[in-house]
Image 1 (cartoon, helix red, strand yellow):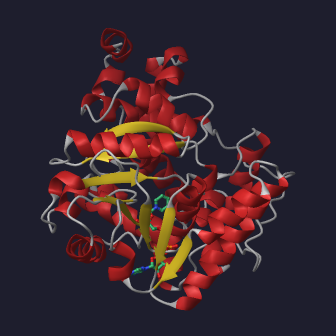
Image 2 (cartoon, rainbow, N blue to C red):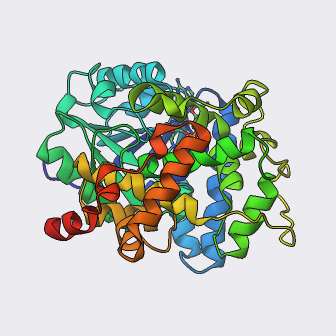
Length: 389
Ligand SMILES: NC(=O)c1ccc[n+]([C@@H]2O[C@H](COP(=O)([O-])OP(=O)(O)OC[C@H]3O[C@@H](n4cnc5c(N)ncnc54)[C@H](O)[C@@H]3O)[C@@H](O)[C@H]2O)c1
């Protein structure tokens, strides 16, 4: 970079996340090379970017000239070498498969200039492991965008074991240019937000598997309580394949409790991946229109359980020193739209009641990942958090 402003970015993978990341970079003034496997995928990505930018024009967030400038700065290519050439930053957004990501990073390392920063949008996987295949582990970083990237308020920056300070500064500068907030995580499975979210996703999968409630009933309860999307619709929206691969990774690297439940596995095997394929837990319109959820029939389900398992996991993240208390709270509020961060929530929680609820879940589903953390059980967490602040 030599202290200059970055000018060209390559985004590898033009799917659900890649096209959105490309749009964010375009809106931040960069020229973007968007790369995928074939022209059809790329043209679809381009029309989605066009559609989204036009929405910003309609809302007067950008003007027509800015729209035109963004579209002019977008280049589509199926040639990874051409995409990576003369870049300052490459962001990989291919499926959540470690071997595929390594293969892409190996090529990016070969084709991009020596100083180029190589970033991954992985949801869960080790940045350091991905970076091992390159000759520049100091220039490898995680840039984890929430979906959809143009509307995201925060980006999670993941520091690999060998990521240099200069690369961190570069990443922070990039995020600032996108006008989003950032949080910083150590390289640990699921990082901050997806690690804390994981047990609540698991709980939903178990409920789905055992047919305890209909997904529409749980989602209706969530929507009635003001959540912008219910947990089952969210899974479909994120992509069941992404949840499948992420759960497999967490099962291997964090706890085997995350092994995927049979019913979700079956949907993935049948290629019912959610919004992207038109069917998953729900049937989606061909235009990606949200499923109709009957709000008049909500489940009598305690949605606070979702928050309780997240608070428990947040305590583990705190104990493992993966990030700061502040970034945990900010991350869960801005990434997953929780009204309060886990450590803001815990302040008003009765720890004995929390311990009982968590242990009950652990016993009911046979999943130790739900078991109350020792600092919740012994009541010391609140003091520990105060001491840390
Ligand atoms: N879906 C989400 O909400 C979400 C959120 C945050 C992070 N992520 C992460 O972002 C990454 C991408 O997820 P997604 O949901 O966009 O997946 P996706 O399946 O929608 O898109 C992946 C794209 O990569 C392309 N691709 C595959 N192999 C390629 C190759 N060799 N070269 C170039 N392109 C290739 C595919 O054709 C596809 O278009 C994953 O690591 C995922 O974990 C996803």
